[in-house]
Amino acid sequence: MTESAHGVARHTALPFYDWLDREDNTPLRACLGRGDGGHQPRGPALAGYGPAGVPLGDTTGGGGGGGHFARDLAEVYPAFSVIVQDLPRVIRQTVEDQKNSPGSGSITYQAHNFFAEQPVKNADVYFMRHIFHNHPDAECVKILEALLPALKQGARVLVSEYIVPPPAELTGGLGSKPMRQMDLLTMALFNAKERTKDEYSRLFQQASPALVFQDIHQVPDDPRSCIFEAVYQGANDI
Ligand SMILES: C[S@@+](CC[C@H](N)C(=O)[O-])C[C@H]1O[C@@H](n2cnc3c(N)ncnc32)[C@H](O)[C@@H]1O
Figure 1 (cartoon, rainbow, N blue to C red):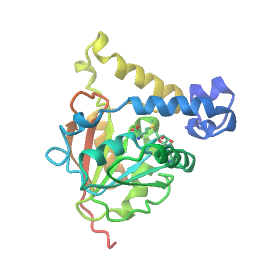
Figure 2: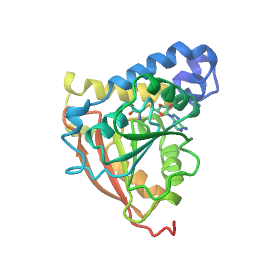
Figure 3: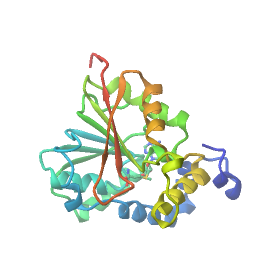
Figure 4: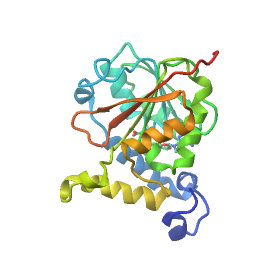
């Protein structure tokens, strides 16, 4: 994560998110927060998937950002109990912001570094949105491994990202431009990339053979939010 164009250009040995934490990056953090908030379907679009499509239940999200997606989800599905996790600085800011515009659903916020063992045990679903494309393969596997001790049998691990088609199917023109741009951006900032279905399947497998790749769901009107689903078939004694 330190071998990136970001590191060379900014003369820093810090990975992007550690660098972003520096005091002098306050304006950039605010800008990124607004950007992340813009990359999401709003409530009505979310109603197009959910229990019928993706089996979301008690949901924990790693790298939840400002919790915009989770807030919409909790609003559309009030029966869900949602916990948003992100780095301490992000959670502090999010909790502060929520005081002015509290959502209506059941949602709580928790500081958690997703490389550390997952503290929320036994959730039905662990949902990571736009996290993996910011990490090289080895780190993605570590993030999944940190979840394993918390997983009950049948727990679902959902990873939401673009799905990159195989090269032969990747069309030219403007249609695939946002995906290509994001692929280059993640390479420049994180030494990471957007991935194909097979690449996601392999990440699950590498983390644990018990994490079985199950399905892909496409969020309506949001190409960035294809959801890769794996089901934990191990037998943790939680
Ligand atoms: C691209 S944003 C996605 C935010 C949100 N999931 C969404 O879909 O809008 C990536 C998020 O990962 C968080 N993050 C980065 N490193 C993290 C870590 N080690 N543990 C927890 N969160 C982390 C960042 O603070 C940021 O909010």
